[in-house]
Length: 167
Image 1 (cartoon, helix red, strand yellow):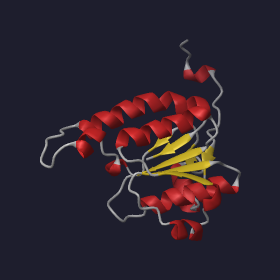
Image 2: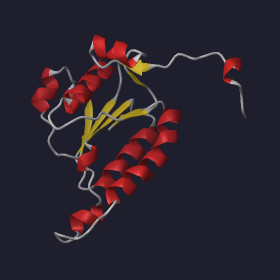
Image 3: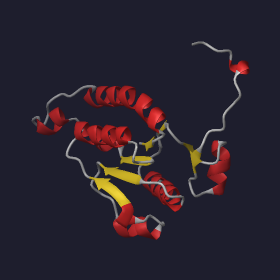
């Protein structure tokens, strides 16, 4: 079906607050959109993980179920608690390689039981063949292909299920 955009009433986009009034206003909808894939980008130690932990805390405050896929194997539970994350009710996974992490994300999204999935971080989603290969082996574009495939698979699922995925 093809519609003219003017023929359809604009539906408001539900969002998850970032915990920062200024950022929520800047984003234009009061936070990050539900049922979408969001990428948080910035230099190392710029607060990306802190922002995602605030998103989790805010989602949990309104009854959201959240998961943290810790590809970096570096989640500081005490810090997360200090930011307001209910760690007792946070699902966490520490996958061994990128494909495993993305399979977990897909399974969680398809379940419809999780409102917010955070993957920390894209840089740590190393393909299995690279981990199992020898030092010095060339693995040109493997991670890019892995991410491209994952995004194609996840986009429809997260929209249908209303799950927000943050990389």
